Length: 475
Image (cartoon, rainbow, N blue to C red; front, top):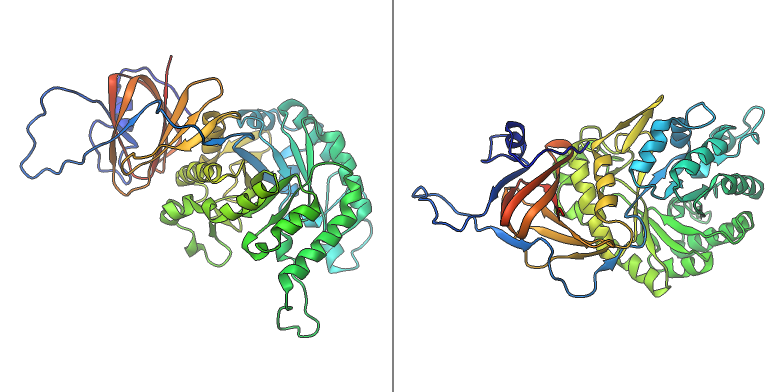
């Protein structure tokens, strides 16, 4: 949770911001001092001086940048996880509604692996007669009325994923009708989850893939999507919700056109816990390559733009297969999320939807009537506040050894976001700084640390390794 203090540097503030670097694992998040113009003090003979970066608080930037048309952060929640969060009452716990509002009422998508195992309530009866029926998930009877109660208060737009694996039109029609009654601020649908992983057997040679498997799988997906389409009528579609978009690189434009999608949605997890937990580390999560991984899918944005459509990362988190405890639920995940979302926006994606599955990477969990937040949640709240709909986001060039981004907000004013990706602290002088607000995401501290400081036009701070600082003027 963020907290405010006075501008006076108290002992507690000194502990956080530090007047000098301390011997901590990561060092203090930010070290602050007003830049002076008087004579420099004599330095030890062998001292190494690191010339500071310099940047203007409200940089004058050329026209352009990326206009934010959706909340930068949305939610993608598995059906069973959502049902558990809604609880057993006629309406969900008030704390869940408050949490959705705290996040800024972002888009909510019911999807993920469970999408292709979900059946409407009341349609499954008697003993299972096949593996497929034995592994179906039946929605609770009160699910849609509880969801309507939540959305009526929180006002989140809703995307509902339909089960393509079972391919039951009657089931899809029933779920679509219930979703229509629950949605209060817009409704769209996705047809099937990660169809590039469905697999297509080669009965002529079962140990080998089919020749032209990419096109054959995509065409089968379109055939099944066309079968389910009457269930949703003219409602908007997001898709095709690919797990590894590169698999369908050469057919994606065709699929999007034939699907009549209004939004191109793909999934991205920069790390994976599926093979071994050793592949998910704090150092790996904080690497610039992982933070900047949305740039690998710039071609998806290009294809969407050629079709006149927005592209979103409709499911994402730190590591596939649920993430890893001690990494995905640690403060480093908040730093990663800030980098990842900024990279996605500047690549051209309109939004990133963070996945919940009852796993370590969930931004928050619901325990009875209580919502327990994790460090990742702090970043999601901050991003939707720093970069509201209507903002313009761009990279600030020539800020030495820092990744600098500026978000010009629709109400006026600019949030300057400084990211130190390097393994040592980085000094920076912020020009045009008089009374400023700092918001700090650090891998060493959970929560968003906030301070309001005064300076005489030049504020010098030292940003600790792998720390993100958002700076804005205070009226």
